[in-house]
Image (cartoon, rainbow, N blue to C red; front, side, top):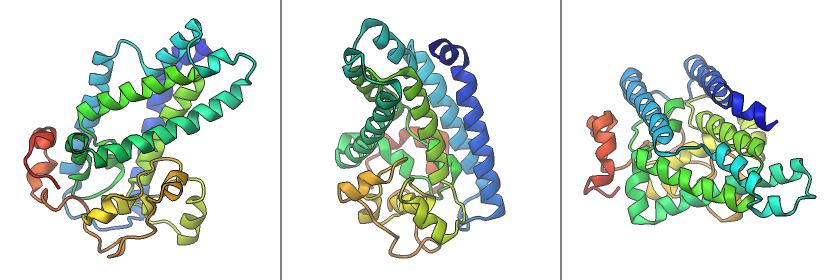
Amino acid sequence: MNMFIIDNEVFIRLGFFFGIFGFMAAWEIIAPRRSLTNPKSTRWFNNLMITFLNSALVRLVFPVTAIGVALFSAQRGWGIFNVIMDTRQWITGAIAIVVLDLTIYAQHVFFHKIPLFWRLHRMHHTDLDIDVTTGARFHPIEIILSMVIKMAVVIILGAPAWAVLSFEVLLNATSMFNHSNVLMNQKLDRLLRIFLVTPDMHRVHHSVIIKETDSNFGFNLPWWDRLFGTYRDQPVAGHEAMTVGLANYREHKWLALPWMLFVPFSDKYR
C-alpha cells in the first residue's frame, strides 16, 4: 500500500483535482446558482494562478509532503496510532480523517478570530463572486502555515499514509464542490447537509455581512458548525441577492494576483 501511494501520489492528486474541477465547472455553466458580477476570465485566471503558485511553493518549502511525514512517522514509531500497534488500520484511518477535518475547522475559526491570521485569510474572502476557483484561492503564507499544522497533527496521531492522502484529496474535492456556483435541488441539499458541507451551506460564509462571514466554517464534514454553534442555515438576503466578499474590498483591483498577494499588508480590516 505504502509503495503504491509513494509511486502514484501525484497522479492521484492531479486526477481528482482535474476530474472534480471539470465536473463542477461544467455544472456551473449548465445550472448556475447565481449570476456572476465580474468577468469569469479575470477571476479564473488569477485564482488559478494563485493555486499553481501555492502548489509550487509547498513543493519548494517542504522537502516532503504530509504523506511523506506519515510514512516517516510510521517508520520511527511516532504518534498515538503507531504506539497502539494492535489497532486496525481502517479504524485508525477513519479516526485520523475525522480528527484532521476537525483540525481544519478549528484552524479556520482561529484564522477568522485572531487578527494576525485574519490578515492572511481575508484574501480568500476578497473574491467578489464565489465559484469552483474560489475553493483554492488562499494566500501562500496561509497555505504554508496550514501545512505545518497538518503535518504536526499527522505526527501526533501517527496517521496512516493512506488516510492522509485520502483526507487531502477529499478536502480538495469538497472545497471545490462547496465553493461552486451550482444550482441544487433543495431536498437534496437538505439531505447532503447531514453528511457533507453543500454549496448553499458554505456560500453563507462568503457573505459581506460579518455575522454570516463568521459562520459555517466547515469545508468537508458539516457536524462541527452545529456542534460548536457556528451554523447558519441561510443568508438573510437569500442566495441570489446576497453580496459576496468584504465591505472594504469592493474594488476590482483586489481580483488581480499582485493585489491578492498584498491583502495581508493592507490597512483595511474587513
